[in-house]
Amino acid sequence: MKKHPKGLYLLFTVEMWERFSYYGMRALLIFYLTKTWVEGGLGIDEQTGNLIYGFFTGFVYFTPIIGGWLADNYLGQRKSISIGAFTMMLGQFCLAFDQSKTSLFLGLALLIIGNGFFKPNISVLVGQLYAPNDKRKDAAFTIFYMGINLGALLAPLITGYLAVKYSYNYGFFAAAIGMLLGQLLFMFLGNKYLGDIGKKPSVTKQLNYSESGNIPLTKEEKDRTKVIFFIVFFVIFFFAGFEQAGSSFSLYTEKYIQREVFGFTIPSAWFQSVNPLFIVLLAPIFTLLWNWLAYKNNEPNIPIKMGLGMILLGLGFVLMVGAVMERGGDIADNSIKANLAWLVFAYLLHTLGELCLSPIGLSMVSKLAPVKLASILMGVWLMSSFVANIAAGFLASSVSKMGALSIFAVIALISIVLGFVLLAINKRLFKMMHLE
Image (cartoon, rainbow, N blue to C red; front, side, top):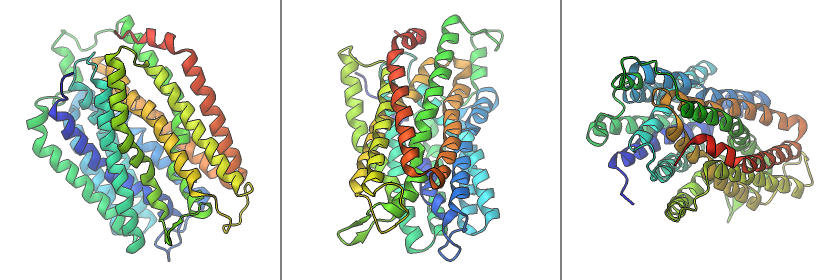
């Protein structure tokens, strides 16, 4: 099998620094919102803090559909990425330089807008490095996904340490510097390793093949687009559960998980690095696995991979139910702690599920989306996380009322059932994809 183009590794590095910026900020956000003013936070109650967190992380994934449309029709992917990077950097600086609700909401707004320009378009560039039916695509997106998670691994460790040692402002400042580094690499190395990829809007490229940019979709393209929307519906449920990591999981860890190891109390924000650590360790194994199975013509199709991902997520929540039960249920006594292993193995199962679903979904959209809808359909894929994160915020805010046991059990049941549904209908969905 041929080697991957060098442009993949540039995009890997740029995405790594952008995700360092985002996850470094996100690891601190729920604590910054809910800690008292004296502790360096804003003193917002937990229920409201979870909702703010959910709406922010939700809208981060809504704006990509707008940014994708602008890139497809007017800007091109490369220019959109640069606009997004500088906007996000400004947002991080707003959080870094002033401890106030005004700076908070301004910073979060800039991050939401900037992410809309950045996120869908860098994923599209990865897909454009390969021919439509290139068998290296799934492996390429898994490598790219390692870049996302390498940044997400390092960020909470650094920003979490700075927040505990100094203040949250220092953590947000480190996140801003990460964004700056990524954009400088993109600006200075883009032409060398990407050539002209992404410089022109997709509609302009379509005009090279026709007198009109309004070419009707073929039946195959319509079927493929339907599949994207159908799978997006299932993915919403996956990420509504998965994104508990930054809200209800973080607050539950802070209060009820035994975090002391050899006399050292692990900062709660550091647990945001557990999932990306597993990604970095396991993604190469998954890459080799998919390549080997593809070589043997035994690779599971996309719906099977994604169905397995949902089942694994549900099993992770079964372990969290076990953690709650070990404490005797939903009791408010902070002195009774659950074993750390419950949390770590839950993260492991969630990571295995994520590797079966998320990078495969990115690859799926790049394979199935019609050329003139490439960025906007990547935005639709990312928009699933918009709905999911808002739902996740409501779920997390309900923990204080309904209890962690009920919320974790419901998420486990729904995820496992939907996973088996995808497995049951995988042949029909794969047929509609019209892939060789």
